[in-house]
Every structure is written in C-alpha cells, then in structure tokens.
Length: 102
Image 1 (cartoon, rainbow, N blue to C red):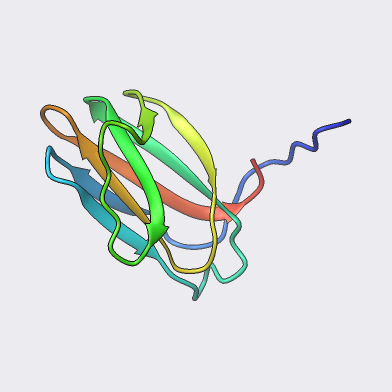
Image 2 (image 1 turned 120 degrees about the vertical axis):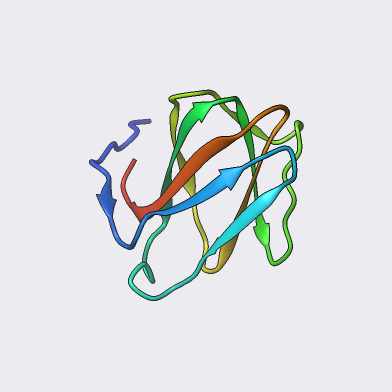
C-alpha cells in the first residue's frame, strides 16, 4: 500500500500558545482555514511540550503527544479542534499553522 506525501500548504494564520506548566489552548476555527485538514505544529523551545487535541475545553498533560524542542509535527484537524499545550518545566512557544498536506 503506497502512502501519498504532499507538500504542506498553509490555509490560515499561524497562532502561538505560550506554553507553561499550566495547560493553555487555542481553538483553530473555520474561516480562512475552513477546509484545513492538517495542522503544522512547531515547538520553539526551550522545553519539551505536550499536546492534546479535543473539542471545547481541552487540557494537556504529560500523557499526551510529546513535542521536543525544535520539532515540527503534522497533526490531523477537524473543524473547531482545540489544541492544548503544557510543559513540565519552564516555557515554550508552540506555533500552530492550519493547512493541507503533510
């Protein structure tokens, strides 16, 4: 079975969450990104971050998706998904860009 790989194309504004040891979140709503099915996530460090995806009130913890310093991940997205981010220590700016591709 072949896996199709395509270049990522942004379909809305990038938003940043200044992650701390208290979970923070952002909802990536429709609008410019109505048809976005992916989100490019980048951890601008300097600490490991953890990401949770949900609807409405969403809280991240250390059991969620780890995002190392400097890492870029492509995650699936549904309409109005909330992305929550937390660090175990310190802070990290985590950027979310909705779009298409992987």
